[in-house]
Image (cartoon, rainbow, N blue to C red; front, side):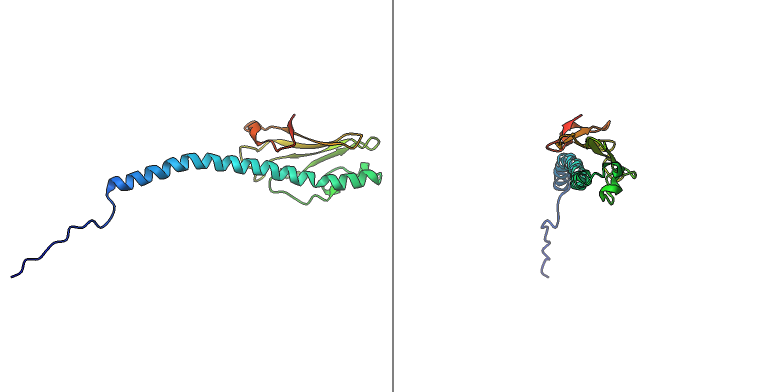
Amino acid sequence: MQSMKINHAQKGFTLIELMIVVAIIGILAAIAIPQYQDYIARSQMNRVYGELSALKTAAEDNLMRGNAASLTDGDSLGFTSSSLLTAAGPAVSFDATTGAGSIIGTLGGDAGTAVAGSKIAISRTAQGTWSCGVELGTNTDEKFIPTGCAES
């Protein structure tokens, strides 16, 4: 009778190899997740800034036509909706005689907790110069302020 040879070749990973892989994935996740959350918060602030900035053209058009009194809310500027703003939409206020005013959006709705409660204000002076100011929410870091805006 011939003796049977038994093959003892390894057919998988050892426990220590699996533990090393899990540890590496954990370390990478601990670094990547906060960076991703910061990216999302920054992009949400920039998106709202862009949405509000788009309303400047409609505001200027109405001001040039002498319709400043009709600029009372986002609807009067053609604003439709934003999932990142509170349900009330942007607050709009312009002086009928000088043309100075502002468009203010408060982050809420689907906005992340890192930026919720922050307010972005696009303001116009009587001379027609536009500027941006940000009032940070309680949990908002100043690193999320969009480029071109200042903390107010």
